[in-house]
Image 1 (tube, one colour):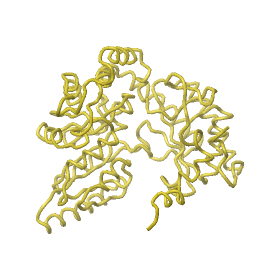
Image 2 (spheres, rainbow, N blue to C red; image 1 turned 45 degrees about the vertical axis):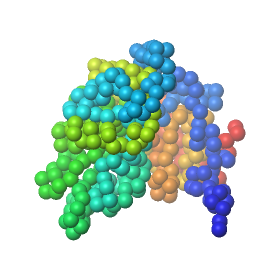
Image 3 (cartoon, one colour; image 1 turned 90 degrees about the horizontal axis):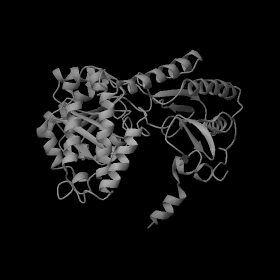
Length: 418
């Protein structure tokens, strides 16, 4: 019999194999100072493009005051216990009601975390006879939720409505054959890696031909899309057709927690059945109060969203004008696609950070195919024109170096103890 720990130590995994050279720099870096467009990394100021602080609320003075006042008034322990047993409050219910109204739904339920929340929502909705149909480029939380499903699941090619229909046909045939079960279709409002919106209007139109329910993960659309900021479903005019709307507070609200909104009867079922909430401590009161303030600002200050989009357009248009491939993004997420291996990508990142003072995230294999690099830039409402201009200049110069082979190396730079 093998020792399970020995197996883990022999195979560190595609990311873990680099940890001795990467930890603290390429992986698990430590940004310091006030959250904003510029922060310190290893003692030096950098322009930061890696924070999902879309609307700039993380350091908004009203948010900081609300967080501090709530922490002083309630502490972090209140309410003590799970919502169902002893951890409920009027403020929890107020936040749920306001979120439901904002999304034009009858009710909503709070969740402690976005990742855990999505996994748990999938678990509570489907049983072994049900079939899940989902987009191939769904976020990891959806993938993990689907993996736990004891029944069948069919994946459709990313944003390919024709293939989506084929999988719905397969799911329908299976359910008719087994004589039990239903179909849950899961997709996203904005796909966080590529920045393209899900084809919600086209998927919703398939309801006229097939019987299924839609669970929408709109983590990156909430607060950034739609006339009021209610998300991708509002942007595309299909709010009423989305059966369950899910989002996290970690992006536009720059906080912790999540929610799912829908018909009251279904939300009530989730409320009384979702294991991750029934058996977990309630969301602490300072987070609830802070999220109420964030939602208030999100609703009442459309200029934050306008500024975010102004910055995103300047960044994206500037990248395109300089010949960069930013894919099919139609959101504020701004990917930059390049060719190269892990070693080249990390050397380029080091050059950007050390010589241009630009801090951004890279996406590499195994998340994407070998030989490809994605620099994922996240604009916010607090970035400046100077930030954008310096970043465009840095990318232009480092791209020239990449094309000339200046970053070729046999191993990733050893920056772990620098």
